[in-house]
Length: 106
Ligand code: SF4
Ligand code: F3S
Image 1 (cartoon, helix red, strand yellow):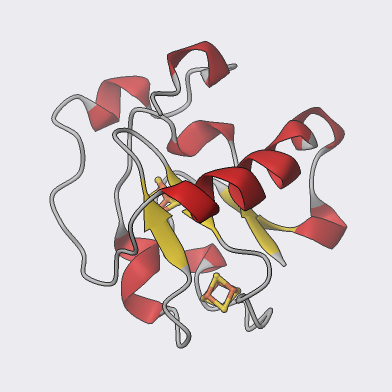
Image 2: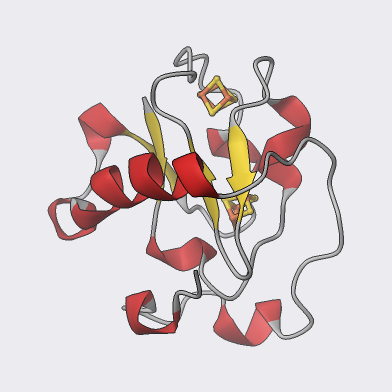
């Protein structure tokens, strides 16, 4: 599956959801999660993310491993999102800030 990682937190640009052919993105307050059981590994979402926050599980940087379980768990409890919406208002300030996990809202 593809995995949404740290740099999505507090940005949430949502460009990714528009291209997903199986609508497997789920939305929290400041992060999106991919349901790994629904993702068909088409790779369409990866280049769409302005924050470069989406990786194939096969190419996941080691320090982002925690996001494998997080995507799976959060996709189970958050609502589905299929249409792009405005990014969070301070997305550009948070884009590229490292280790935003402490800011993840559930
Ligand atoms: Fe959706 Fe394809 Fe991205 Fe998986 S890889 S989340 S199926 S767009
Ligand atoms: Fe997040 Fe990138 Fe999608 S910032 S909402 S993974 S476009």
